[in-house]
Length: 242
Image 1 (cartoon, one colour):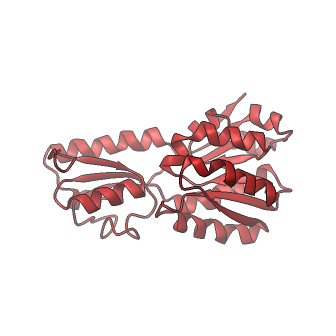
Image 2 (spheres, rainbow, N blue to C red; image 1 turned 30 degrees about the horizontal axis):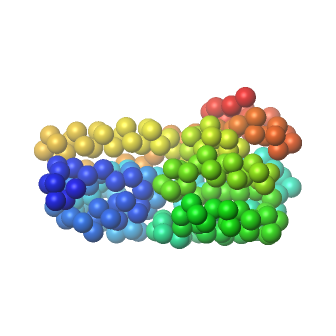
Image 3 (cartoon, rainbow, N blue to C red; image 1 turned 180 degrees about the vertical axis):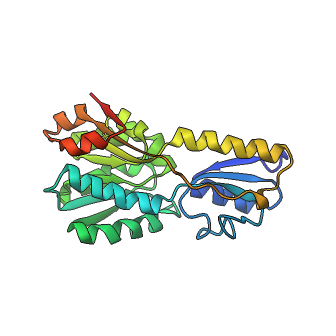
């Protein structure tokens, strides 16, 4: 893209934004779905980015803690939660810190399991069974999103209630999702592109934080897992798939 001399680069997620940052300091970069832009070194501050990168933060570290709370509310008896992470995703350590702070109050043990590529999925899910995980929390990641149907199928095969960030994962068969709307974040990124193409500098465009979060529950999956979702949780859901 840099060799093509494009006018703007849109980068979805921390790994893509890091790759874009390493490739150019001149071409404007609009990031989206980045957990901690300041901590990752992409911007100097949310209000004054200061360089060639701006866009949208996802505050996924705070979202992961809420996901764990909702999972425990849906399955009160769960004590071991497997967490699927990608070691290549630089934002996952931050997300895990957010989850660890919450799991202590919930009395839940986290079992961190890695998958760097789809070829490792089978072995990772086998390890979940061996460790007797009672539920699964899938950290937000582009590779996991791309292979969401495979992941939800593997979770169903092992009867693991799974929590994700985006509703697309629940539409693919996952039990629950809580987080920002990915399509909404991408649409919001387009407004940054428009401003930059009209002459605005990324350094002067504040980073936007999400204000809308969605809770989606798949009742078909709940029934297949013999789970009874509390009515109080269903009432708070933005969407229930029957």
